Image 1 (cartoon, rainbow, N blue to C red):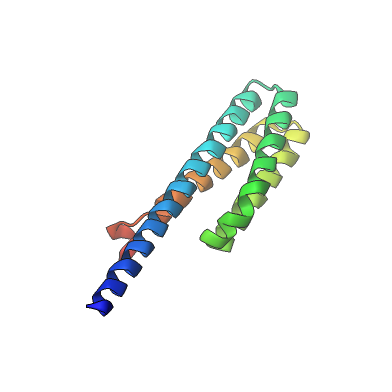
Image 2 (image 1 turned 120 degrees about the vertical axis):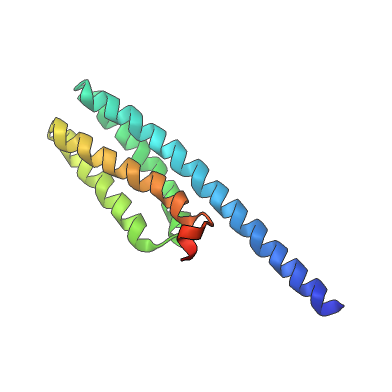
Length: 126
């Protein structure tokens, strides 16, 4: 009986930890993606000062999230997000509208893709 209780408690803890982790990734990815959406709008309107200001805010937020994300997900994905944001920053500084918009769109896509990849689904199992 004691063995069954240990299995039930362990399984429950794993499921709760997984659910909490997924909720955290989902919430933080959506928040950061929304910030990037604002940056895209500023880029398309060629409001470079606003785009740079919002991107600096997004980078600050990303720096806060990055240590925990690195524990929870593949480091390669974290590095790709970081590189894309940095390239976007340089394109915004250079006032390159098309390249800046493209990099921010890629960063947004990468962020939104992470929780989907971590979610338990048949496609992720097979």
